[in-house]
Length: 504
Image (cartoon, rainbow, N blue to C red; front, side):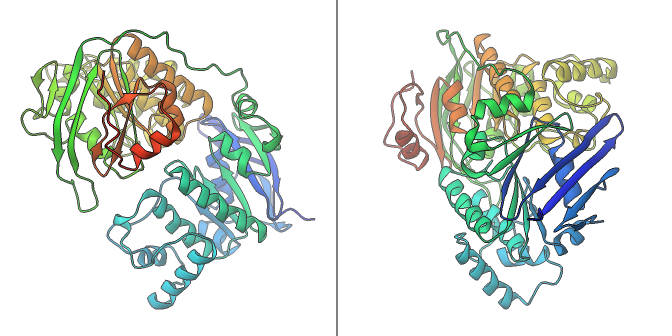
């Protein structure tokens, strides 16, 4: 049988980086093929070449046995290649149908398109109304918009980049059923994910990249997640450890913290009350869109709070902005890497200056100390193994996982008293995730307090002392993580606020 897609010796180099080095692989018709590798291994560059976003320097691509060299994504789509990106490209104020029409070359009239959307969504078990406004959709429903947009063009190869990073377990099950249906119909799927147990459940074959080269392949169902992770990084993985210390004095009090929704599509915060102590890691779980971003903004000082709602060491800091809170030692790393946590077109040195100026003494009397900022950026790169040619590179030039390591490292190395992080290991490989989790544990060991907001429940169970759930802007009372069951967590995430236990 002729492979659906065959790659032979694909190479792509950028200044200072060999992103792909003679990569070869093939994908059979109807096969679900995993592409694995640590951050910076070359996965994104490879799929961009397949999708026509990047032109290879050397090598050969064949689709259905014919030479395949798409000059742009439009040509790739016309040849039967679709891609669902990790970051959605949707307009909140438009309807589902309007968003899908914008991504089509020759969109039919809206009535006919709406009927097609209903038919495809019913056929593949992705319930979605074409008339709904995208800003009102959950993260999982937004992903369905992207998938349906691809399916309307009847792709023979569907590329998916970290498709489950913002999905609930129930939404993951729906997605996998859809992908299995597509596979049974003969559509091939190239699947990128750092969630290795999902890879074992879904994928028929896997190719592993390391530093731009193919270093192995495997059948996921016959290979343990740990073995795949160690093939990716080329070393034995260590499990994050914490010696366990008694919690210290209270640092942060939230008293009935309430804030209106920041926009028509935001979530209001409703009467959030908690106490955070020195040495404590509080894990906050919840389905995306339930107030995670709004809570981080209220803690970081991006949005003010009424008097008496936010207290640090007993002092009211509700009106203090981000810079004032940073000077006090309250630091934050938001979920959105590009545009919120980092300025895309600024260098890593400039991004280090943006949040590190006060605590790292990078400015004095109004003058910026750029050599010191560059040194700070270099320390972050070294300590957190950020794969980049150097601190002068722009933030947008890094892979998502490497930028995430830089953002987390930038805050951790400033020795915060309180660190609030949203999705700290989103899109990073197993080795980097373990390193980030260990860094958070080490902070707590040093008497800092840490709030980890995450949709990765395994992560929260691994590192948190207490767990709370956000649901429609309300926070359940934190409970000791030890002994919590999946059923209890599910009830808390679903809004069962009666399951409250005093926070000790």
